[in-house]
Image 1 (cartoon, rainbow, N blue to C red):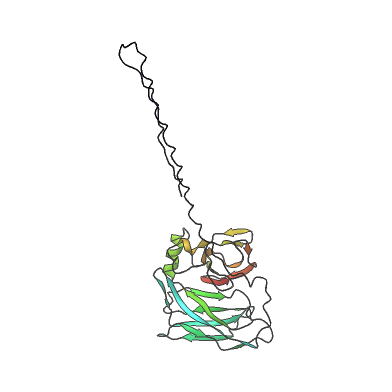
Image 2 (image 1 turned 30 degrees about the horizontal axis):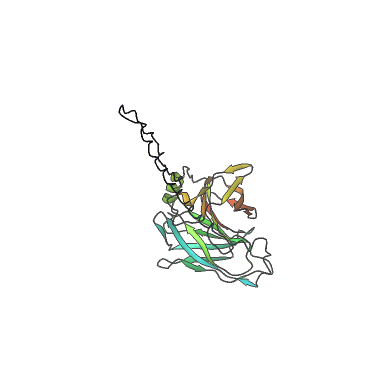
Amino acid sequence: MGNLRVCVAALLLVPVVACGGDSATPDAAKSIDAPKTIDAPKAIDAAPTPDAQHFDFSCAGSAAGSPAANITISGKIQALSFSGTTPLKASTLKLFKNGNDQALATLDIAAGSDGTFSFPPQPTNGSALDGSVRLSSVGSGVYRDDIVIPAHPLVADQANVPVLAVSDSDFGSLASVAGSSQTASNGAVILLITDCARTPIAGATVTLKQGNTPLEVIDASTTPLSSQAAGAYFAFNVTPGDVTLDVTVGGHTFPTRTLTVVTDTTTTTQVAP
């Protein structure tokens, strides 16, 4: 806020001069009472500073615990556009374990559904499930393929997994608005940054590198998607291969992640403490 400035005019006392030729001593000029002291304006309290939003970092550094015997992964496929999100229909989802090209399970989401999905329970054999969900064969092929990776290997059921599908046209428009571009030979990255309670975090410090080369990361809160993609960050036209990710929020540093970018595919991951 600007400073409040109070201007007070100075009061000038002018001496009174006697008039006429009378030799009598003129009456002394009556003294003019000194102006009353003007009280200084009361100080105006500064506008209260809004409380900084407090995020939940209580899970940072906590051990994951022992994995359950079986894990169920469920969520909803949503089409993300400039007008909002809508359930995505007629699509194929596959569940993979990292290091294995053979799908653990495949789901065909029928046209007319609300986009919800749930994979059959997957045995863990005593180890956390480190894998991904892959979206493909969506509608008539107008949507980009998507690989969804959880924030950490899973040791328990995972619900509300966000599978976001973006059309090729909308993705190209978003890249253009962000001052970037997207070619079919390269991939892209979407980061969904949250705290331990899955509260989306905008304004994080995000560093994405391929080798020693930093990549441009766009905070969705600065784009036309701001109201539909809180806590989302985009990296466009990324050369296929591994990238490293570092995130800092208010002095809290998240664990470093390594992601694999695939040709003509969007790699989406939740990023949490």
